[in-house]
Each structure stands twice: as structure tokens, then as C-alpha cells.
Amino acid sequence: MNAKLQSQLQAQIDKLDSVSTAPAILMPLLDMLRLPSDRIKLEKVVELISYDGSIAGQCLRLANSPLFGRRQTETVRSAVMALGLERVRSMLFGLCMNEVIPRDKWVFAPDAFWRHSLGCALITQRMAERIEYPEPEKAYLAGLLHDLGFLVNSVLYTEKFRECLRLAAEEHIPIHVIEEQVLGFTHCETGQMLCEHWGLSKELVDAVHCHHDVSLLPNAGPLACLVHLSDLLCRVRYLGYGYDEIMGVDLGGDAAWQTLIRAYPALENMDLVRFTFDIDGAMEQIVATVDSVFGARTIAAPATS
Image 1 (cartoon, rainbow, N blue to C red):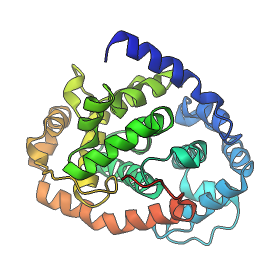
Image 2: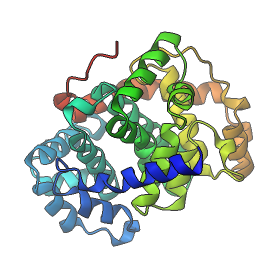
Image 3: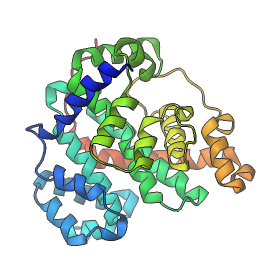
Image 4: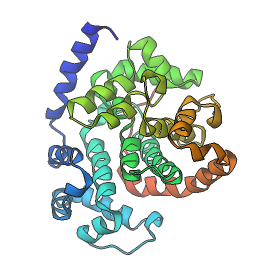
């Protein structure tokens, strides 16, 4: 991306905070995203959720989903306690962004977008726990945020981005390849710029920036590698962008996996076939969870052709 285009994009991204349809809790929530886990206060989270009845309802739906054992949670406070502060913080962010995008600006079908984003969040967290990454909830958040650039491109370049989706679906190839050809940049770059504008941590920014290509970073960290691999696993297991991609995944040969092995040498002896079966076994539950959170809020997306 040349400097002039980057400057133009940054100016437009800076204006996204003022989108009139943004829920009242979005900006306080962004402030909370910057806080370490031990500084997030339960009562503040409950207060934010209670500002928006529809978001409160979604929070309760997730707390009562099979993933959390159907606790029969009936209050926002008990839902937050059941889910955990960090998970609720991450989920709220997704729900807020679902409200921010005007109906006529959605390029991807919203249910497909959120299936992929939340699915990637859950798989990233599961992988983080399996390799004993010390911050699995941060892994969850990184998985949820990784495709923020899709929302930026949908709002700022609706028709061109719609053309990108149409071409990618016709050719069955990853959309970031088409974005580079049509737009001159990808959702990885616009997502990175939005995260930087919001003041999110470098680790999260890097994960968003290089989730399709960890070689973009001179030294990709474990979090970026986990998100990259989770994104691939989602897309080859019918939790992608709503169209079929012709692609294969060699997990053991992927540069991100090799980077993780260097950081966690014990992974070298992991049975990758069994590991991917474990991920497959979680898919049905993950899809059910995504449906329980976002299914009722599906927005009719414009046709892609």
C-alpha cells in the first residue's frame, strides 16, 4: 500500500468512531478492551450490558447455551459470572460491531461473518489451552478481532468490496488475494489500522495484521500464529466466509506451527491428527454457540451477484 492511499484510509478510519448507529456502550467498551484482566470490574461490565436490552438478551442466550451447560441463567449479573469477565468483554465487542454496520453496508452475510469470527475465537482459545499458552482469554479476543478489516472495507468501500467477494466466490480463492488486486490493500491492513487507532495492544494488532501470512512480521509471536492456524482450520471445516475455498492445510508444515514449536518445544511430539480431530469434535458445539449468540440477529445481506 502506498503512502497516499494509507493516509486516505487512516483519515476515513479515524471517522468510524462517530458512526451514528454505534451503541452507547461501544466507546466505554473500547476503553475496557485496553485494560489488563485484573482491572476489569464486574459491576462496570454488568452496567454496560444493561444499557442495551438486545445485547443483554444475547449475553443471557450465550450463558444458557450448551457450551456453558445450560445454567438457566436469568440475570445479567449471573450471566457475566457464568461466562467470565474477559469472555463477556470480547463477546460484547462483537455484538456492538454487529450494531455499528448499517444494513445496506453488509457485504458478507452477517451470520457467516460472525460464525467465522466467533468460531475462530473459540478455536484459538482451545488451541491456546492445548499448548499451555498462558493467556487463553487473550487468544479468544484475538480470534474474535482478526477480521475487523472486513467491517472497515464493508463500510468504506462497499461496492468494490462486494465485487471482491463476488470474484473470490466465483474463483474459490481467499478473498485477501482479490482485495489486493481490486482495492490495493487487504482487510488485514485496514483491520490493523483500526486496532492501532483504538489503541489496542501490539500483540493484538500483530495478530490482526498477519493472520493470513505470519511472514509479514520479522518475529511472529505465538498469539499471531495461533490466530493464523485457527483461521485456516475454520475455513477448511465449513466455518468460513460463506463460500467454498479450494485450499488445503498442512498444519505441521505451516510456518506458524513451526514458530510455535520453537516457542513450545513439547509440541514437536504432539499427534497432529488427534489434535485436529479434537478441533473437529468441537465444531458442532462451536456452531451451536455462534447460532445462539448471533443467529437471532441476522441481517439480510445484499446479494453478491
